[in-house]
Amino acid sequence: MENYNHGMRDTMDGKNMPMTSVSSGKGEEILPDVYNFTNQIVNLCFVGNAEHWVLVDTGMPDSAKTIVEEAEKRFGKGCRPRAIILTHGHFDHVGAVVDLVEKWEVPVYAHEAELLYLTGKLDYPEPDSSVEGGMVAKISRFFPNKAVDLGNHVLALPENGTVPLMPEWKWYHTPGHSPGHISLFREKDHTLIAGDAFVTVRQDVLYKVLVQKKEVHGPPRYFTTDWDLAFTSVKKLESLKPKTAVTGHGSPMAGEELQNGLKELVNKFEQVAVPDHGKFVKGDQNR
Image 1 (cartoon, helix red, strand yellow):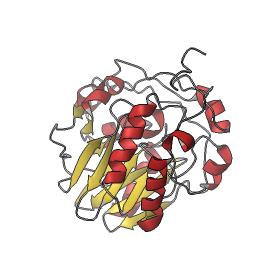
Image 2 (cartoon, rainbow, N blue to C red):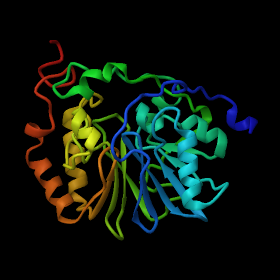
Image 3 (cartoon, one colour):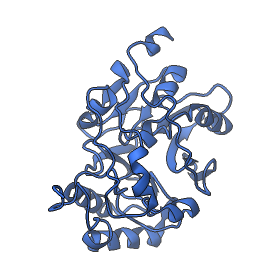
Image 4 (cartoon, rainbow, N blue to C red):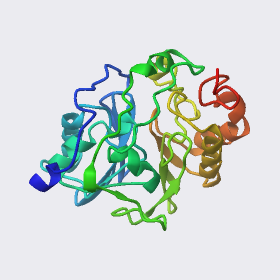
């Protein structure tokens, strides 16, 4: 255990955010080996079976106990994943990562461009509470933006697109929401774990977050720093023609609802995803 405590710094400790939705605490088997769990307002995935599973993303701050309990409900007492894969390092996706690494003694993998934010070297830009959007966008100035420090327990994903300990899956670089954001795709059944490259709820509108109103939408506005790259990433994921998708926020989606929603998002990205104003919107940076 000493080895796994060494060199880590948990900037998420004590940063619990009192945010919830009707889906909070609920788990859903999307496929026999893909299980979605909603931790307050964010989704994380258990991929695999009791003998071999991987955790994708680690939820909100101070949620490690909740995540461990859910994993043990699914896989049995004392279970632990082979690894943790992070789609990116924003607070609601790495909230419990240090606590879970200490408990489970497993490696973490992320895109090389995200490692600065996962080794304490660089903080994310502060959330843009001035961005066009609803109440969640307005209160986003209270969201943590400090980098966690996983030390040498986080490793860069292989450049060839393979995912360690997830042999059927490939990772795709889907930046825009963050520089090293990735999404995971399994070709054999066209299953997508999208992270926040796109979501299935309007994440900046409090009412829609609370009731989890289902709609394909662009990445959360208050943290997205490059809308051109975000658009490119959405087009990349739409071209994969996913049949099932779990996103970082909102309900899982499948079939025509998913494919038609993604196609419409691509066709109308400028109108429906890109905010009219905000410090990361082109032409608006100096306002």
